Image: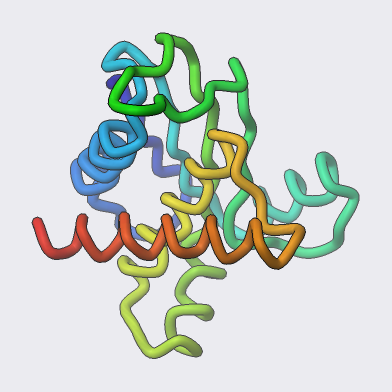
Length: 150
């Protein structure tokens, strides 16, 4: 798994931790070891531009996902094919505000958002209540397992 972590924000990011998270999630979702993923951290101005350009929504958001090869998780222990998973873009300052509200650290919020973004790249969504329950249960399980292994 090739995970490129790029920090274009004014926040300090532990790139190795997010690369390790990407490897953990892609392994757990049975993706081919030659899959590629980019995780980028940007400030609010850049996130707002992306949010307006791609979703026509005002203001910055916490995370956005840009799928490339429309990969899906492997099934029954078999790996998904190799390919480019896509890009996950996280806004640390929005994550920090959400973390304060949720009562946990900014890093934990950014880890959660990164998992959320990767799941979107894999075709998960939360538009319908049943889909939301499934996606949020998976992301919670992945986050708790990753944090327990740190």
